[in-house]
Structures are given as C-alpha cells and as structure tokens.
Length: 277
Image (cartoon, rainbow, N blue to C red; front, side, top):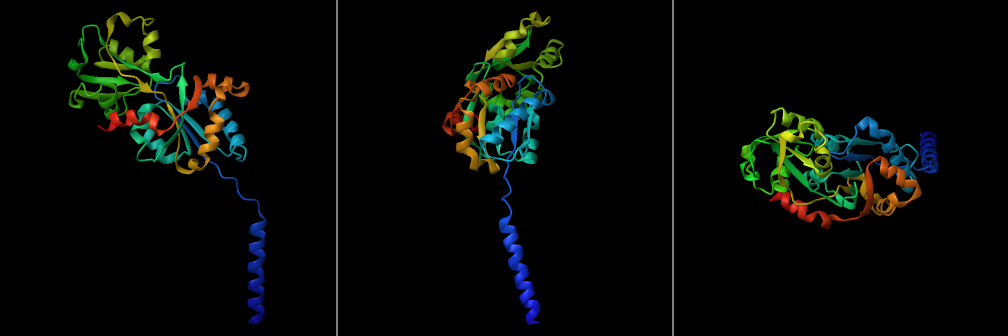
C-alpha cells in the first residue's frame, strides 16, 4: 500500500511539473463591426477585417490568427450577434451602442469618423405628395437605422411623433428603401447625409422630398466588453492615430474610416440620455 501511495504521489508531482512547464495559452478576443448604413457586405469587407485582426494581434501580443471578426450592416442582427459572438472589441453605430451599452457594460475607448464626419445627421424623406412636416408623419418608416423604434422615436425624431403612429421596417440598403418609397410601399425613409447627397442622382428623386433633419448623432463608438476589457489601454493606444500611419491609412480607407480619435463614455452620455427618456 505504501509503495502505491508513493507512486501516486510521485506521478502527481510529475504531472504538475509538466503542466507548469507548458507555455501559457495565448488569450484572444473577437472583433465585431456593427455599422448600419455603411456600404458593402460582410463578404466584401472580410479581407479588410482580416487585415485589421492581424494588426490587432500584433499590438495585443496575441497568437497569429487567433482573433475572429465580422462586419455587419444589418442593425436587426445586433442583439443575436452580440449575444452569440460575445466580442471583446466592437465598433458600433450609435443606434446599436444606445440600445446595448448599459446591459452589456460597454466601455467607450475611441470613436470612428466616417467620410470625414465626427457626427451624423439623418433626414426623413417622404413622397412629394406626402406630409409637409414631421408632426404629420404616420405609416411605415424604413431605413438602415430603423431597427429599434426607441432610437428612431426618441433620438432621431426627438419624440415629435408618437410610436403608435409608426410601423418600423428595417432595410439595411438605403437605396432599395428609397425605391420602395417611390413605389408607394412605405410612407417614409430615414437616410444619412451620404445617401441624401447622392439621392438627386436617382431617376425617381423628383417624386420625393425631405421634411425633417435630425439633431447631430455622435460617430460610431469603439467599445470594449466581455474579455476585451483587459486590453482597453493597449487598444486605445494602438487605434488612435492609426489612419495617419503608413500602415493604417490604406486599411482605414478600405473600411471607409477617416480617422480614429480618443473618446470615453462621457462623449456618448447625451445620446444615452435621449435614448432612455
């Protein structure tokens, strides 16, 4: 019996020594880009997302190709993607951030300017013979940021229209939403400034008109959550100014990012206050 005990004890010591001698497994985290209204598809953006992942792995001292990432423009997928993927880093449009910031304990570390804008205004477009002001709006409202009625009514429309008068129809493709409007399938479409800029080039634009412009909404936020919190300081240092570097300039342009600047939760406080009222 004593011999067996000695063997078991020695075996336990040996296993412990071997385990301690093994290199520590590299931890990782995942990147989720949820940007309603941004151009492109997940497949088109994936090569550029992969380049961003390889850059972040180096900056965070992670094993090569240990990070995963995906680019999504459909805001209606936000909840399921955030819950299933549990990303550590996320780049979120303001409509997504406002909806999930509190429940998922997100911490803002930077903000991303797209098309040279540090904030964004949205515009309500209706048929030429539709209502002349926002207070008369009713019916089906469509658009790339129309995936959360609270964001639409409280933030974009500033509570000027009752939610009971509207039916929300998410459409991640702004031009397709405008075509539906011209065909009488929806009552109004909410578009961003880039879409409004090019709307005049559409053959059916004479049949449409703008009746309302929102207050400015902050630029997309870079946040850490879940296991990404431990990388907050390294990430902030790595990302801020990335678009001005030789290595990062092309990468930012490929994702239609103009610049990445420092930010914190306080920069989005007014947005959350509007959203939660």
